[in-house]
Amino acid sequence: MKEKYIFRYGFALLLIIGMTGLVSASVGPQVNLVDGIYEPDEWAYADPTFAQPSDKLVVTAINSSIWQGYAGGLALTQSGGGGTMVVETTEAASCLYIQFASDKNDGIGIVYVDGEKVWEGDTWANVNIGQPLSEQNMRYLEISDLSFEKHTIVIENKNSPHVTVYKIGFDRCPPEEIPEFPTIALPVAAIIGLAFFMQRRKE
Image (cartoon, rainbow, N blue to C red; front, side):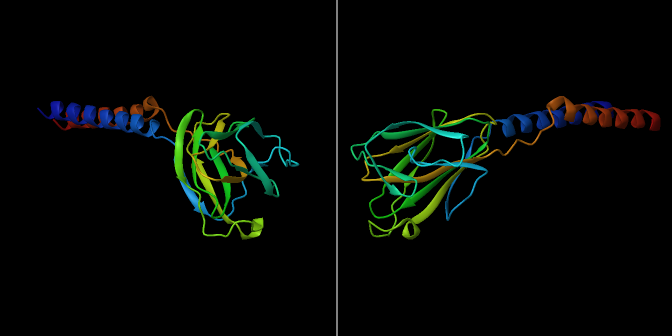
């Protein structure tokens, strides 16, 4: 009877470990809008005509009317909706950043990563229009826990006067290695086997 309980508890433990591994593997990207300015490992100005500090991010398309005037920033001004800009990373990364510079003219923006919508939010700020960059409300969108690969970022203006992007960047954030199920299961199985052996010796 004791032997049956040992095997039952051991099997249940292995099953729990396996399910935990499956759940942790299915967690999606984490997205946060944070006040302030962030300086990632690699970044580029949203305005592709501005002198870029890095070739690791490339603005590949702008499908919108635009306004340029914030020292490298760019406003998507297609207020009828659907105005987008597309940015490609040329290196693998799992943490992306979008720096917004906002005033009262800004509104709802949408962000897609690799075709998946990851964020929709209001970029409006209580700052009078026409102010210099130093007076804009600076916030950055942090998108982490992505797969460690090259990414395509699409930023969309959702029927707002402006969605103003100052910079786009990434930290490489190489993923930590998580032991595979067999790596965890084998030591557990060994412990269960040892417990069974010790129990038999006592009997």
